[in-house]
Length: 285
Image 1 (cartoon, helix red, strand yellow):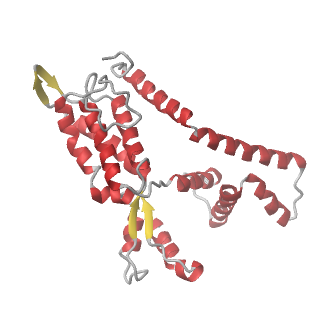
Image 2 (cartoon, one colour):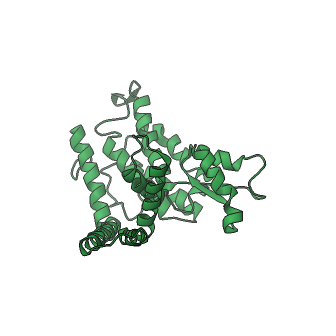
Image 3 (cartoon, helix red, strand yellow):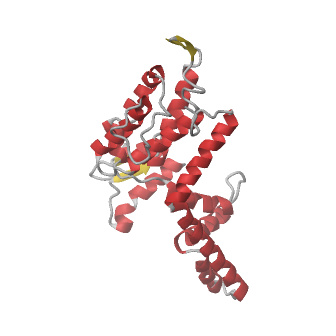
C-alpha cells in the first residue's frame, strides 16, 4: 500500500507542482524507493537518487555490534589466558555499543557534504578504542579508559569497513533524517490509532487535522471551527496557545547541547545499571 501511495505522489509532482523529485530519502529496506525508481515506464526522464536516513544508518551500527556480540558468544580467544566471547565487562558492553553508535551518528552529522572527513571521523572511533587518539574529536578526553582488547577490535573491524563505505556515506552527505515525517505520523496515529480499523472519513479527518497542527500549530484549528459555524471561546483559545507554547518549549529544550549530553549520559548509566556493569564509569580502568 505504501509503495503505491508513494508512486502516486511522484507521478503527480510535475502536473501539480511543476517539479521532478530527483531524490528519495528513506530507510535502507524501503520498498517504496524500489517502486518509484524502477517504475515501468519510468516516472521521469532522470534517475531518482536514493538518500539514506542518517538516524536509521546510525542505528545500524548499534545493531551490527550487538549481532556480532551474539555471533561470537561461543568463540574462544587466547590472550595470556582463554577468553570467551567479545561481550561483557572489559570488552564490548551494551554501554560501549551505545557510545560507539552515538559517536558514529555524530561523525556523519558533523561532516555534512564532506565524504573524506566523514570517513576519517568514523575510523577515529575505532582507533580511539585501540588507544590512538590523534584523530579523535572533541568528545574524546585523550585517556585510555575505554580501550577494547585487540581481538574485539579485529572482530568489529569489518562492521566499520561496511558502515564507512563510499557507497553508503555518499547517501548520507545530506545529513538529514526522517524525524519530521515520523513526528507527523505520530500526530495522525494519536488521532486515529493504527491498531483499530476505521473508515475512510475518520482517517481523512485525522490526516487533515494532524497536518494543520503539524504545520501551523493548535491555534490554526480555530479557523476550522469558524468555518463550521462554531464559536471559539476564550478557554479554548487559551488551551490551544498553551499547547503550542509547550510544543515550542519542548523543541527548544530538546536541541540544547547540554540536555543532549545529559540524555546520552543517562542512557549509558541506565544500561550499566541494568547489566550491573561499571566498567565504563569514571575510574573503572
